[in-house]
Amino acid sequence: MNTFRKEERLCSKKLIDLLFKSGSSFLLYPFRVSYLLADQESKYPCQVLINVSKKRYKRAVDRNLIKRRSREAYRLNKAELLYPQLQDQPKLLLLSVQYIGKAIYDFEMFEKKMIGVFKRLHDKVDQ
Image (cartoon, rainbow, N blue to C red; front, side, top):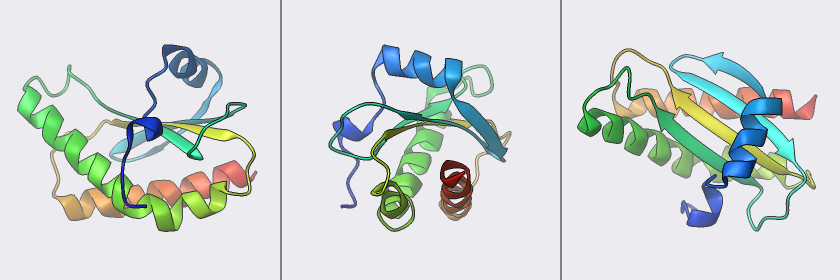
């Protein structure tokens, strides 16, 4: 279950446009999270898009490091914190996690904040 397969990544341009046009969002520094429950069929209950701004981080090495740490924090914690809540939902959760921080933190910070994102997302989706 601690995998991050291609089917779990949000790649469809149509779904990405739908997410940013009609989705909701919240800020939990250093992440801005956009989410939307969509009527789509999928093997997994959630599809995620992880983004780091090229404007803020010019060097690709830095962007890749941030994306790698964010993906790993997502991968390790989704099975316990995100998926059990979404099993009851008949819809697919589209999720965009944008890194807007000014510094590059260590992995423990990423993991702690990603757990916070999951908890806040749980509250928002239940409403």
